[in-house]
Image (spheres, rainbow, N blue to C red):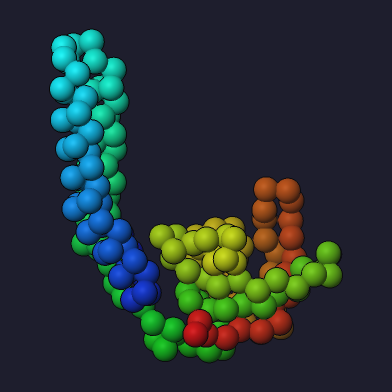
Length: 158
């Protein structure tokens, strides 16, 4: 199994989510199943079937989070070099074709959130930037063709 790299803050978020699912989530599921069961014949009870299906999804999610947490390695920006792009680097790039600047934070796939400009190191852009230095130009194969980014600045995640 692969190691899952997380920041301490993301680890806490996942642990809290897991605790919520195991306590409140399970309690709510039990209540829904009990309510559906009280409606009579289980063989023709769509509400009961739906509640059991929802319970199955909940248990799957709990299992998935527990498995992920068993493989976690905490990473810190202080552990990464400043002169090359690594996980937890904040990278300012210039799209040489569009003449637009973008700033991305490279994170693990589990922490990626494109709306917050957190891109996975396994994404096409993240993977292409890894190991590169300031002022290097990188060609990246993206779904709509080839993009060229010039690295303007590299800093650490705060």
